[in-house]
Length: 360
Image (spheres, rainbow, N blue to C red):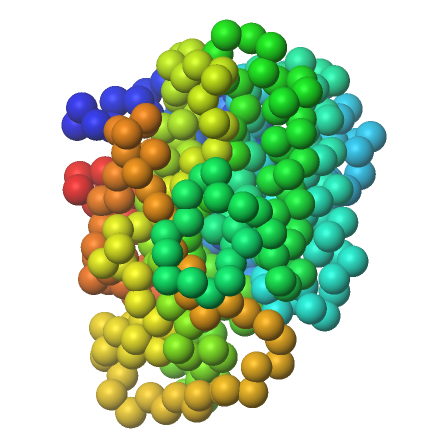
């Protein structure tokens, strides 16, 4: 194992609780931790039709899975008390921007109240360590071309962004009132960019929408084609979460450290939706694919988003490993394997992608 990956050994035999295991990022994290030898406890809503990663990686059989809604404080608190995890990774969320306009109350209840329930459960049960995942959209984004730092103003002009900003404000409140009494940091919030990779099948996300259109040979309706986003492979941000978790577990960070980190891509991975779409289609090998640009703006979305990742580099010695070409290659190859390989050995192929990432 390369020196820069040695921190991953610290998770062997640890009891790790992950919320959101039936989701895209949660399933990747659960699988990776299980491969590292961790005792993984999953908390999530029951898998839906689009939970292909959770199902095909057979995670229900590999981990100790509970189907609990994080909005149910009594159940989540009792579970944490019962399981006594060494560390918690909180990833559960209502994560679709377009759904936040159709179901605002559901979004606010899940992303704000659900996250507060996790923090309160950690406080009451004296659970030692927490990685609290929000979003790059938590910043007060006024569409200025700048890279957001961790201590920039929080806010949101749309339902999803404001729900994530509120989740961060609640985190800071809990940190300042309950979790800053010891010498070392025990909880941290993390913010990633636009995360892509194999296994995501949610509607109204650009990569799943492209994949579904390619397979159905239907025209892709491209929403907000000129919006610029920081694209990164799912393993990039998860490696940051795991490294930060390792730092907390080993008491490497003083409590006077600002407790939030950005884990975004290099600036070269930053491009607009139309460009990433064409890049994906060309890699897939479909020259006759048709795109329809939807400029109707059915709901508000920011046009420019970028993360400053200097803090993670300086304090954690973390940096992105994959360029945009590698990110797209890995993503395309995962979906092609899923759809076109008759054997469909998704577990083996997913392990190969993790190893490829670690070798970079």
